[in-house]
Length: 143
Image 1 (cartoon, one colour):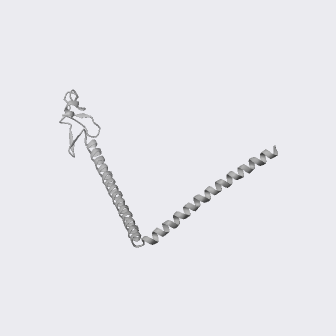
Image 2 (tube, one colour):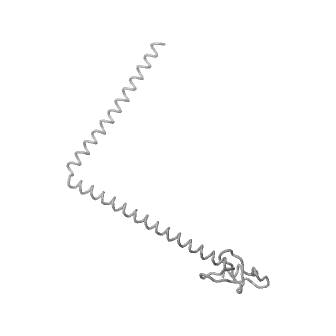
Image 3 (cartoon, one colour):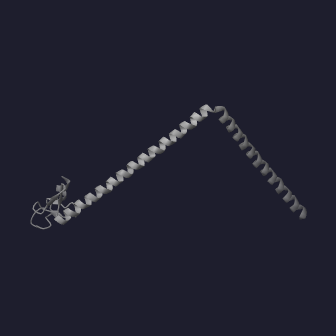
């Protein structure tokens, strides 16, 4: 119905005395029933426009098929990555379940090393403050 409303008062491209019944699917020129060229369920103004329109539709269909294949491949790769991640998590859980004491002792060792690093950095900070204090003292003695 919207097409009929948009054609009210519009005349055929080739026959100015006739009302247009459709617009060309390729170039949108108005045509009457006599000038209409049908193809692929659409109306065209000429054989050239029909050829161009059908070729364009075929090209778009090819592009859409390629896009769908790419989308499918991306989904498959995401699924494969999730399966691998799940397998790694499961493997880690199985290893931890079988070697709980060993893993817990390693975690404690690493935790104590981290704490010693924190103590070392605090000690270094204290040494720097002492050095700054001595620098101020030297500076005040010189002046």
